[in-house]
Image 1 (cartoon, rainbow, N blue to C red):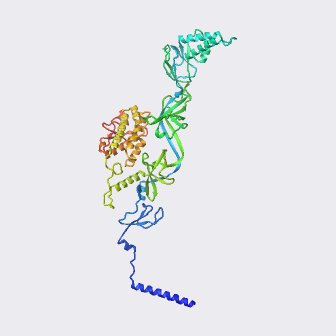
Image 2 (cartoon, rainbow, N blue to C red):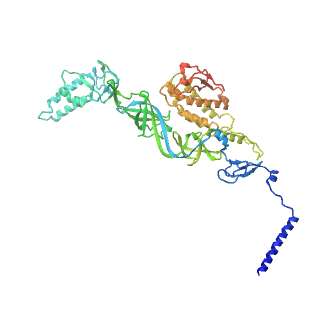
Image 3 (spheres, one colour):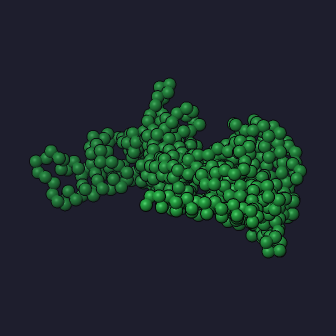
Length: 595
């Protein structure tokens, strides 16, 4: 049996070999698809990752991100699209523009808010001392402003015939039934004494003064006017020998033991402050010193003109002694600066340097790996010193570009412009022209945009003129208008246009607050002026109606204010040159910057 099986296997093997020999002799070999043959028909342009289209190579290989095999893209083929808003950069380009990234993660949000305001007295303890009855000031116990008085201490000696008659009437009634008598006063007599005492109170006497009338010398015709509260005399309206009428002001007393630091908080800052927060207050009148207080009250009424609310901070103000003279440490009505430091518990946060156009349409560029950066629109919450709160658009752990993102954004806009202007060969028709307000557009501004830009330039020109005239009051008045002018300017321009970054800078530097002096005003004016100059230069290129706007440069501004640069530019709507950094001191210093 085994022999039969062996013979059958041998016969099948021999038949298979004969069939193979016959086929090889009578059928031609099929063509081999080697690389050299393929290259004569279709050439491979490059290899690309289908999952991460920005990963390309001139050789076969695998995606450096996902590990998938790279697909060949032949000459004439379009390849895989990287997606709208994705910018692909080579490793050399990334090194040249020094791209840096930071991780999006949860962390505390810190904010330092600085406010300018004034130090005033406690308004709830401010008193006016007036004459309760006609009379004459015979003597003054306090004859200068700034004197410290204690409640119940004498301010002046006062003579009034009516008051003197009322005192003697009370003394007479009181002596008829003195407190030591064995027989108590009758009800009628008691009412007469009470009525006489009530009349004396209406004339300004205290209970202690009324009780002491029984011991008063009958020849003494003067009555002491007493201080109603402890405090500092801030005004004196009378002199010795002066006759006064009922209701006439005599003294004004303020309680300086607790001062009020008052400042305006704008709408965008109200989300950060609340009663009970600590505030550090500094003033030029006490250099090197910091006064700590707490927010006691926030006015619920928003001022229509400035879009701000008044905030009150209470500051202890102890007495100090200098050369044997006692005075309060803080003076009345000082200019001061307040610092509120706030820390919010952990939130999802992104570095502020990563966000472009943080106003209307904030965007970041997310590192996708392999040199690709994707534009991502965000929804932002509160603004910290170094970070923004992220409400939407990013996930924890993603990395965003913090340095070099403006250059990446410029490349993205160039890519979008090229895509709009390039003809669409697949349909045989040219791409539609760019429209106003889109990247790469060359058409002029709309009437709304022209009007908004012109109004803002007029405000900048008014600020320049006020500093050139050394007029601090006018500068502060114009500075308040920036809080309503900026929203109107930003609303007129779409945030997706090429001016996105420029408008973001203007929004950041354009909110001005009243300044304490001209140097402070010029320091606050400088960053806004530089961004407005950039806006003016851009407008002159964009729209011919702005060709008349002039830009001037001063070559020696380093002494204009602390920390000033060597040169600075500013805008004027008309000549001649008026230097806002020096005013009358060097009004015509500078030269025009030609377009």
